[in-house]
Image 1: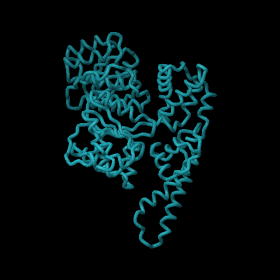
Image 2 (image 1 turned 180 degrees about the vertical axis):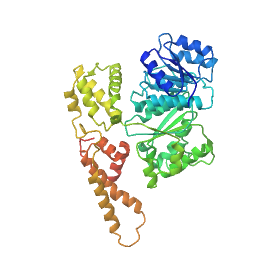
Image 3 (image 1 turned 60 degrees about the vertical axis):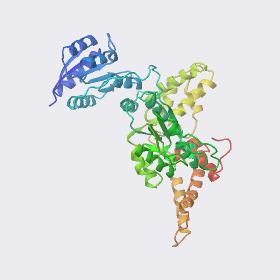
Image 4 (image 1 turned 45 degrees about the vertical axis):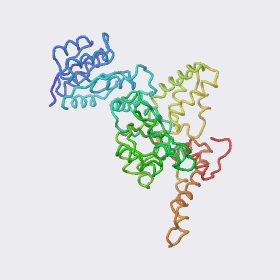
Length: 480
């Protein structure tokens, strides 16, 4: 049975009562107070085996008190609670040396598990760190449980060099997470360099990543630095890693394994010191199954996976996001706007295929184009008048016609060869035979909207545009 004395500090009497009862039932002794002064006196007396404290108390902020506690009793684990459920709160808790941060409201069973773990794990002094930055305006918004989990993971990763894989649909904010890891981590004084694999021609990706020597290929009139060299001492963000060609994957694997690379056309190995953060909106395991992504590279990149939820899975964050984007628009000189309660409820029912990016664009459009100060449901209904609107969250768009078309194309291609061996280049022929009708039918199903088509296909919009150009797929003029 658990044992130990817990020092509890919270100015909310109801929370003190609930936690006292819950922790007492599992065997802990609890001493509760409503202020920081009493908590500090108990710590100085040597009382308690663990602290649970709210951040905001009447006489002192816990983030100011924790460093003093750590100086006199460095091994005393501290669990921080807060109703200020932002990434900044999670980061500050980690910087001050807290054992864990729990956003309010929290699950009592989870709290008890954290307490058990803190009291049974080997005691190591948590090291307080200097604040990464002073500003409060971190561009990650949301108080939903899904975002709170992400904040807690990010806070633990800030002072590490672990490789991170961020997955999520387009528009969910993957680059914002990568930037937060850099800007609030120990490499913040180094460069942050981003490269989008889908936006660069495949034949140039290795040169873009690793640089090239003069004369390495036609047109290489002088030596060029690559993104690894530019990111030295900082963070390299590899966006849309699923679009990286196999040849570049092999070279990247060597960098992750050996910490060195060679430029295109070069012979001398160059040591590198960068943190790798990768991102994808595709299922890399599916790409591995069809031999389009190296499994060994996946495991090297996927050391710490972070999944960003689509906006439809965290609709409770929409009001906060809207306030943030409206404030940004106003700061840029656009007139102030608000959205009424009916409008907010309407936005929560929308599926948001473009996720947070789509919401941001909508808010900016509303601020720029509409004269009324309060935007109502009728305006939003007009702005979002499309087939996706109003669809229940659990009802996904059907792709049966596309699947049937692909199957027919494959059967037609293979049956044309009878019992003979397939000719050379079959892989490219299959792709071309399947991709062109697939892209064409997807654009037809989305009425030419490339943003929706890319979302339905699960690929980046830049990749879609390149495919449409390479495959000479006709796009209806006037549609995006």
